[in-house]
Length: 116
Length: 113
Image (cartoon, rainbow over all chains, first blue to last red; front, side, top):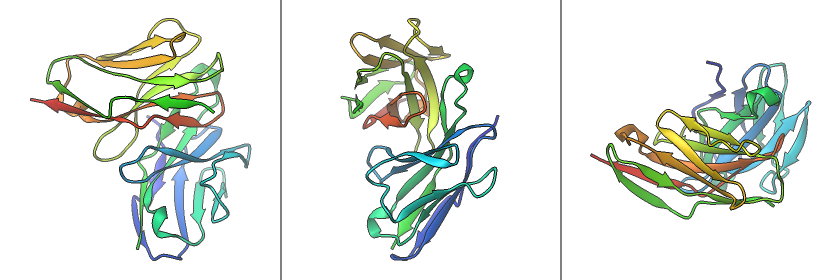
């Protein structure tokens, strides 16, 4: 069964460093997302991406965050200058956008980011 | 803005028994989708079940079923014949087409043997 894959599964970084989280969405999916879950809290929307541009972003997604789809398969989240409060599980997700498949969003296994 | 409320922070069920997790949501839309996701200790987000708002029939997936009450904006999850592997955090989520998922705060389900 097709799945969303994310790398790395866990990354530890120094405060102020840049981090890139990588995702390979399910092929032929059209909508891509990043979500964040701080330990013990609910899952929060960061950004959605469609047709090679951001379609919606939350107030969390400030200037230190960016997303890119550099080729036909990868979807990346970059955090330019990490802060302690960026420590969280980051989930990539994708959706086909095909009404016949029911608009289900499928999640990757997450990238656990620890900022020290 | 859409909101999703899960009023039960934690629930317990005896193995082989049935448990129902509650979820309510707020929206002015008539067409949308609702989901239950399971998050085990590994923290992976696993889709449990999906309901389209335009369908009156409640969705079922093996031991999992929902009670979807559109007028009441209620979407509860029933787990029958509970198993130890069902222990996890369960999130209710709302989706408008093409837009973001909005999650509830989650319900921790404990299964006692």
